[in-house]
Length: 240
Image (cartoon, rainbow, N blue to C red):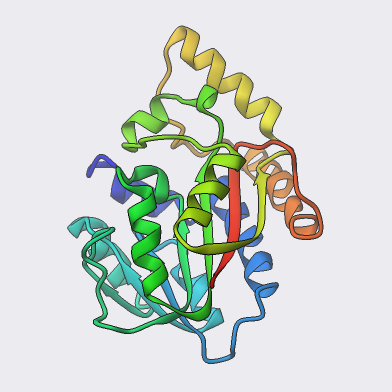
């Protein structure tokens, strides 16, 4: 991602409907994983640390982030141990193995997504769990993807196949951000045809709250249900 975007991202993670709702969804998904009470958790590619406070409720937290400026913002939040790292070949924290590894909108940034998943599998305890989110559908590609240095957007079969090839048993995979999909897809396609800027803007407070409520409502259904389409994908898997 462009380095200049990190301070703005750190601000937006605290107030933008997308980050707020996604954390609500992730909280519900994590609660369903039945992690041990003393779980050791690694967020690979923790960025500016917007998820750290939420993740710290589930166990001892570790984060890795390559970009110096983003990593310093993460460290300043005061949650867990944050170190420099790069996938697939520079995973920090020695030989420590984890109960859970998260890749939250990280895999799409990597040239070698399969290699990254294989590397992280080695850092999971036997039976340890993986949680991944990625953007979905190539036709939704926009300036946002370009400015954030995305390499790809995924389809469900593609994501599942890559994770399984890396040696995981996939337990759950679904599209999400489904309720708002028609609106977001329309805006993305319109911007593509006329030219448009980045998505990093907070709408008015009433709109922001409404969008958050609509997106976050999906937490009540994801898990028991799988959605057939959405702006993003979410996947859980286990090391076997």
